Length: 296
Image (cartoon, rainbow, N blue to C red):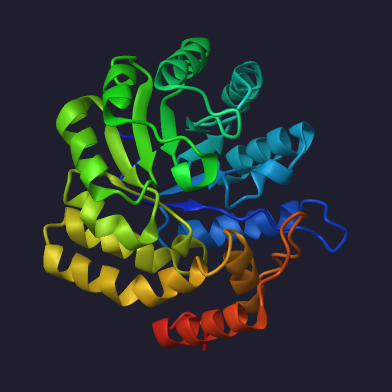
């Protein structure tokens, strides 16, 4: 059995920006502290929600270093270091390891994509270059490539391929992963509307966008499940659904960054090519945050 990097809800944390577009590290520290105070089980820095695609190399590594130092081992820090350039993924993964990250989150290659054999070669090269646990990230709606269960079963043979963040949305596929990989691969939900379904297949938790605005609630969905109160977990999952849908009414992290600003955080602007949400999306977020109780 591979020990999970965390169990529960890890926040896919936003990267707050100053008005001039530079990273607001002071606010990032405040958000990290608030997340930990409200039950977040791990910090995922420089993921999709953290606008990693719009950070330059120096900023990316500095965000990882800051998160590690500021979190100070209170919860695990998972660094997003995936790339469609294997050599660069290895380089930044090594830098994350040197910075003290607890694990790596590695999205599948995008745009140039590659085959299933290429995915095995790509992840094997990264895993062999570091000692940290590697969490493979499958999100075909963004990348254009779907990591097949049989491919994950092959990768799970590598000792430091620890988990998959499954955001395909295909529960049948997740079931196949669980059946093929067993205890050789931990599974995390990559979708906030599928936390309980994936927990029911043996999942260890979620890497969550919802946690940005509702860290305690996302944690509680998982905690109820692991305590054996599956009915409560399901009730909490269903209660969160309208807000989950609102948070994905536009391209992530457009809605959640607006929501964080609305909640009083200095989340700041998005970086191009991302732009703010429409008035309709803003109204939906306003309504659902009030209905859920996170906005008074």
